Length: 387
Length: 133
Image 1 (cartoon, each protein chain N blue to C red):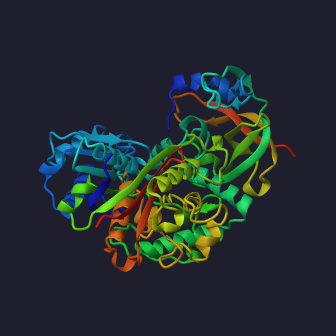
Image 2: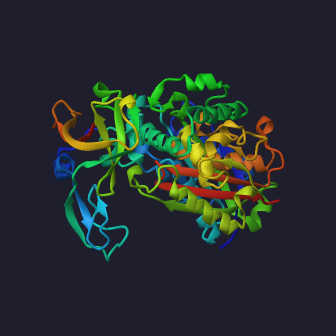
Image 3: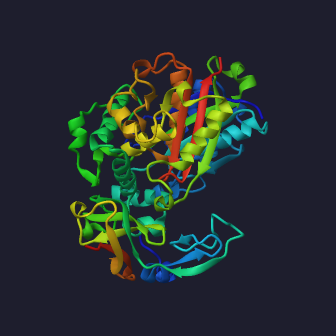
């Protein structure tokens, strides 16, 4: 198996984008990634795209063929991959496997979701399909409700507070303010977050990631050839995926996502790294509690200490570990299928030293953590500079 | 989300009577029922099992932004309940606000209208929970 590198990364501005549709978003991200890699379409031999719910959100299935067509890449094979909110990282993983195996040399990976063509209630219903439709959602649960029950249990077991949750949102908005691609580039105060409208107690509006349109793409090549394409290739050290029960109630613990723990343990082992080696991480903060749980599952903090670490500023840029320098899902926005690929873009730019005001100093190793549903799918990638 | 009539009909034993299953090999109870025991897989022996509906609150939330069909009920309490057989399930808690409920409180299943998602479709019934004082 060959080592694989990212030789180009690109994304659209995330946000509520009424002017552009599914195909415009994904082609723009793809072109940006190709331009960043300085390659032409002729050099690409395959593609993978992550999108969770294009059929429900814009009525379009068969998106692999659509993208090949509109990117001008016919007849190369492009395959759609779905794993709820982790679809983007799953597509990345498929691309890595294709290059790593020697089947393909240059592969483009995209993630996209066009969400604002429908109203909020309809979108929420569709996103509910990431959980157990018959035994959670149909009985009255919502996604914020499921994460709220994780938060309640975390508070019960460890004394985590609503202020700790809010501090995650404040930090992610602060980071989003440095990201030109972020949906929200405004700073917020702890008071604003704490006083925002209740969604699913104890989670408030400011504990929740928004509904977003957007796309992101990366170009992959074998590491051994990467320097012939790019001066700054980013080597992917590990790509690990794990699953857990679809329904939250079937998990042994509500205060940890076991699939994420397993995927990260395997990734660290594969790369010969420990959590202490990571200086920048993009984690799946679909809700503030999810970031707290992620920082514990990934081994950055002991179980139960993630909330206090966030409140104490240990996850800020300049803290122990910079978490969600892009602004995370909270401030960058969460076009579900795009998120995993956007995380890979952000880590690539961090390792290349191109994040401007949001740059973390002395970055050696980066991590992405992407979760589907309430934790039934988890994907962890590890990265370092390949130059 | 509108549920098809055949799906509603298919789920009557589980939703009306809390019919689940039990693996006779490892004595793990499942709700909703499963055809394969994840603990024993093909060594497992799955049989139908009717849950008592009694249990304790494992975690809860109060939903303020309800899904379609639940607007009139909001805000309402949802909980993950640990049933006395050791299995956990998700359900609504009736006649309570978040101030009335604590983790560890005893509950029992009650038969209630869940929602009617289509004026021309079936009314969906099933279990919810209520606090036992």
